[in-house]
Image (cartoon, rainbow, N blue to C red; front, side, top):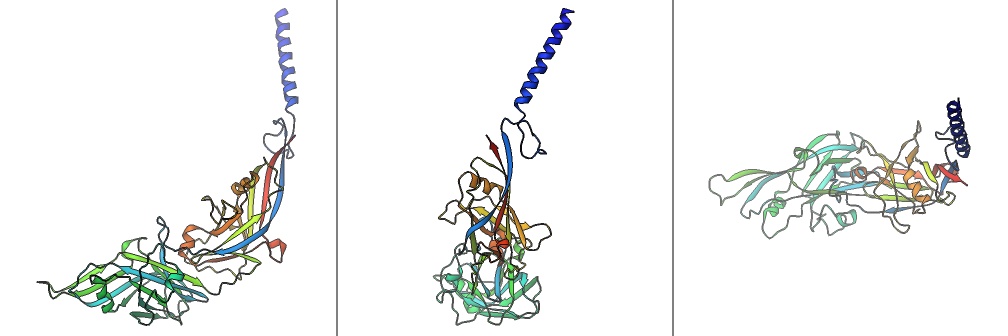
Length: 399
């Protein structure tokens, strides 16, 4: 009987201790449906807030399309459409053969993309490049300078009103020019493809170092060498070299009510939010940036199957240098204008006291391979509902 009494006493003691412990952990959180409710020593409050952009700016940053070593340009752009213009530079490296005579030279390009009507006018002329250039550094201001190429002499030309998406085009090059490329003591700078003024189509052709070599630009030279015994005439094919394109849009009018991300040229934007209302120590559960696109001002050229804007956290307030991690924008729900970005990481930086703003640009592949333009409403949009905003949900402990 005494043994049963001792057991009963122990059970009552344990039950009492558990009740005391449970009572001490009975603080609740604001949202009773949240898992873990009632297990915290302090009250955890979940709050929602919306931040509206307080500042934005647009700036141009000339980035050579082929400047990224591990992301070669997929296509070279050439042509005109509206206020957009693109020129392409090509360079082959024949061996030194001072005694040959060039009988013919043919340049073959594989066009793989088009912006503009298939029946539109597409035309360009080919000119001798007069100065040294590098595909990693060539930009529009350099290529369009009067000393860069021989504008007064046309070495070949092409015009068409039939412009399918995929097409092989072969042109006859000036044999005297190609002969110079073989001559010792003379540097081959290559050629510049310049759109004709009547052109209203932009096209892209396969670039070196991307996809199969059979798609690369090709130079076929038939030459004769009287100083060689036996075979005097031969055909040589060159399918490697240097290439890039440069592009410009003029005029590019910056409306203060908008922010922009323009690929290929390049324009980027900075957006800043006042995050002072977010308490230090808060845990950001979710943060979604909403940007409203203006369809009337946006232009998608179709060179990329997935045109995508992205945002990065800026590393300093006085800089346009950004963190490598990025957030990709996508149309929200069934909307055709609202782009949503998951920026929980960036918002957590704001809580931690690091708020240098967001950089809006296009994803890496798009920014160098297309001329897409996204125009979004900015912090000075006349309609407040269209201004950039961030919807944030965060957790904070209450004492």
